[in-house]
Every structure is written in C-alpha cells, then in structure tokens.
Picture 1: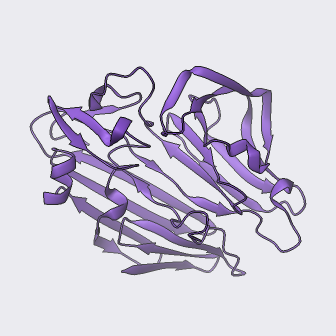
Picture 2: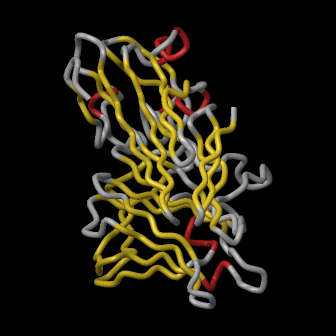
Length: 280
C-alpha cells in the first residue's frame, strides 16, 4: 500500500512493503529519488535491518545455531503496518513473525516514522527488544538519488561534499561483498569533496567509518541543485552506484557487512548494537 505525504513545498510516497520511500519531489515536481530501473538497481530506498550488507556464505551463528539471511536482512521484504498517519507524516510498524524468527530468533518491534516539513524529509527509526535476552542488530538506510537531475547535466558534474574536511580511507569490498579493513585506499586527504565518476564504484561501494562530518551533499557544479543528507548518529556512510547507472546512493549505517577475519558470530560483527531486554 502506498501512502502519500504532502506539504506546499514537497511530496513523498512511502510503501508499506518494507517501509520504503518511493518518491521525493519538490514543489516544482522534480523527482529526486531514483525510480528503480532494474537494468541497474530495481530498488529505491530499502530499509536495512537487522543487518547491513552480506554475511559470509549467507550464514551466521546466533546462540550457537546457524541461521541464513540475505543481503541487508529482511525488513525490505516485510509488510509494515501503519500505526499513525497525517497529511505530512506516517509511522509504520513491524513485529517479529514466523518468517523473521526463522532467520533472526529475536522478538523485536521496529518503528519507521517519516515526517515531511517544507523541503525536508525526516526519518526516525526505533528498534525495541521485546525479548528476555540481549538482541544484536544493525540498521541503515539505502536511498538512491537521481544523478543527474536535469536534462543537459551530467553525472561527472556532480560531487559528494562533506561539511568538514576529512582524511579518510575506504576498505576493499570483495567480489563476495565482504569488507577487508586490512586493505585500505586513501579517498580523502584533508579535503571535503569527491568529484563523481563511474569508476569510483568498481568493484563496489565506498565505505567510510567514523567521519567527522554529519552532513553530506550530492550536488551539481553546473546547476547547484542536489540533495543533502544528515546522518548524525550513524557510524558508517556508504556511497554507491553501479556500472554507468544515473544514480548515487547515500547510505547511513550503524553496522556493515561481514568483515574479513571475523568469527561468523552475529553479535561479534563490526558495529553491531547489543540491545538489552525491554529497551529501545
């Protein structure tokens, strides 16, 4: 079910399947969100829970038992229930069920709230542990944005710009989607701007950890138009595209994919949050 949010300055559409943002437009009708061409990437803005990225061979150990889970967890394939809706906001809810328990043996409650105000969409995520044992999880977003936005502009005219100058290296992402933090490539050297080119994303995403910045812009030097993302509170930021696709995803994560050298135990994955019973 598609739910619409609108103000005089903007419009957003949220799908109850996966609590996924499907459209984000300004007052002039410009669509900022990638619209899911399957030639490149069929999704638009999936919610990542209870993990980010891939597991080694798709399997992990929880409580001494082996479980299987696909890339980015299962939230994007679950139907959320609306619990609150107004003209400019909506809150969606997902509870543990038979399907989720087969992959992730925890009694959770996940709430995703979207609020449209002027030309800004605010997304709030709340994870509750309803069980009686500590619950490990990671959560994140994966919104893709159209690049370029305007006819006559080009992908290479865009840059990713951070609010502060950064010195940062990105780990290698293997062909299996695992992360090797022992193999780092310098990306930023006391600078705050990454000019876009398609080969930046070979073989996969740029993965940043513990940046000083909390805001990032994706903007055209030709028109000055683009988007800004506030990722305050998220340990990781992924920046991703694929092939010659006309989009870039800006992805705030609390955790990441399995890393080379990890134990295979779910709660020991890099960046995992261990949530005590009955807390959120």
